[in-house]
Image (tube, rainbow, N blue to C red; front, top):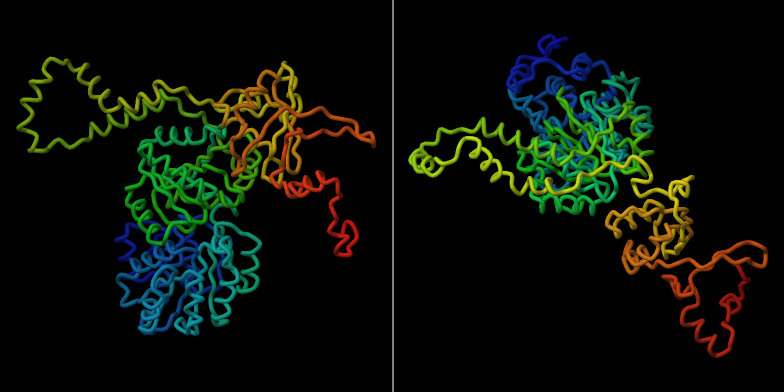
Length: 594
């Protein structure tokens, strides 16, 4: 392997690199730095987050920048404020011994007037988010006529965030003879389009495999009931006393809910999502970076561009809708040559999504058993014992109290003293798991409560079935998984055998074991789903229509959530008066059906 001295970096940069603790270049640095120093043209580098990309483009960029020229010579575009500040900070560290090099970070959420003043004083390198740079160009503050190098960092993230038009607009402002470098974790069609439009025969460098996750990350999952997700999350955190990770959720509401529960249960956790102000985001991130927080619960949008070192875990509380997003999530750990773990909480209906992700990252995920209470207690106890072994005892203040303490504890032998200390430290924690039931991963439809939703369900359940009506349908976003979750939520984990499910537009029918029908009707009636009151009752018998087709009657008492569209009070009025209701199309001169 080459070292930094052999790459041709100047003494000032080498000194800064040495102080930062860089020993040998990482693969992406080993390939990109010589190409940039040789000015060999445009470059596309496909590499995961945390593989040393900033130093790969930053070190040669600093060496090639003319400190005497106060016009912007290099432009670095990145997706978020956090990454923008991180890159600018790293470049400042690299340039510590290279003379007066002005590096400016421009991003939304900060004073644009201050940024304009800094640009007027003169800067050589601009690190920017696309939106704020467009504003500065529009005000005539950011002049890019002297830019000779453009770097698009985390290009796939910027496109995912909708910055394509802004990137195109910015690249149109930069001189044609520039050199363009594009860094991305994945090679999407949109990335390829940018390369075609704005790059001249780029050299392509791939670290690892295209669209693959970091090599140092292990991938595993827990198969769980949807209702047990939070309980399993707690068990993961408790079984890893030194955990330092990000928990990814699908929505802002889910993010805040999970974070609030963790905080209430005594974990060092907080939420990061789009509803927070920039000041709140900065506060949360600062606490997380200095490890005052062990767990950061975040949405994908909020976590884009986060650059935090030494994460031990990424936990997918919900699998992402876009399978490529998984690559970005898992890339938050296993950085800079270190190992990391990506864990996913998967319920049975998500197994297909999991298979798609496995195909994308070209890795088979390991199925893990949910940690038992006994295992968790053992790990926590030995973690505490290790801390006890390493505790510093050279505190002069306690010396004067030791004789009295020894006298009070003199009657306790060594074994009893240890037992009491451990019990005192872990009494509440041990009670949580000593008396609680272990959570079992679902291994079949029957165990999971999904039984009956496929062929052979009646064979698995020997009893009779009753057909029930429910006033929820496809227009409510109501599908089999929502039905099962509704049943599981309000039946407190009882195994309810469910048979055939028929989903219609505004209502549905489903079969349930006959002996459970009354219990389920009572459990679900008057509950809520998506702000709608739930109504469940025995379905009426099917009848033969005039055309010979069997049709099922809705319950006589059933009423739609939009009564005005089904007659409502107006129809009742005309019916009582014995008159026919006039048709609107007759008044308006329109034909029926138009």
